Length: 360
Image 1 (cartoon, rainbow, N blue to C red):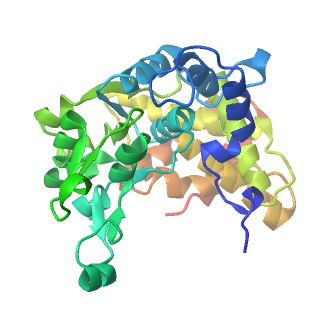
Image 2 (tube, rainbow, N blue to C red):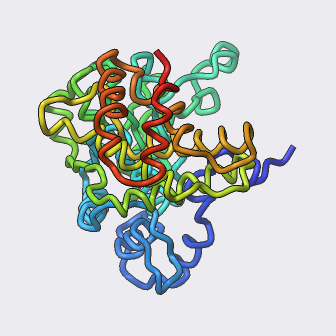
């Protein structure tokens, strides 16, 4: 059965923005680093947008960050994106990989169970037993494919991997070669082609789970992705992303802007106390705000046939703001009971009136 883009819950960037990538490639006369599909300037336009050329803005962040990231990837150093959860590190890595390689699918998802063969290569054991080690029985993992094909490899949540798994990247990033000792001759060495590099991500909240070694850190340039500082920018982003998600969920009613204003304002207030030493255990990120806005719209549409209200915000908040710590639930209650009444507007009043919906 053929699967169309419309049937996918989340098409990769190179599929979602195929027309934009094609247009940029057709008009790209600037010099390109070896192995790149686009020049640095065209790749930057793809990520940050260009209204005159009809290229949409996909990443809300400083242009200088995107430029530094692209310059890093054009060198022999890997790119490490660090920051709070939900600050679009993975989105940025996906967009850059799509622009540079035309493919963002070579991805390693880091975790406690990640093994070295999931990064480099493994074997088809039926063929291995019947034929012995051969190129036909070799099963390439993302890193080997990226080196052999000259493409960007994305390594998500690298610090969640055990140290011995992290350190298998040392020789890959310095020598740019993977040795396959089971194979003889030229097949036993896979050298990186032009265009290969690595984009890794790590959360600042739990980066110390398996702190990277100093040797591995030296193979990367570090760039910090910060939360969105501006309310209007964050509101516009939440509205755009929530609208797209709701359409995919079969909700035809667009989200109400006044409800989204209350939602985004609540998230910004709940993440703000970190500056006063009252940091919540849960990260109230923009990504979480989009998730709650999506839930509000689904709840309102499928239960009542409407776009969703401030009461739905309260009902959806408990699973976001109180999933890590009882203190977070208490902080949310104090906010609804003591701070929300000071704000003006009908939806803020509705938020206060619905505080009883917050589950115990």
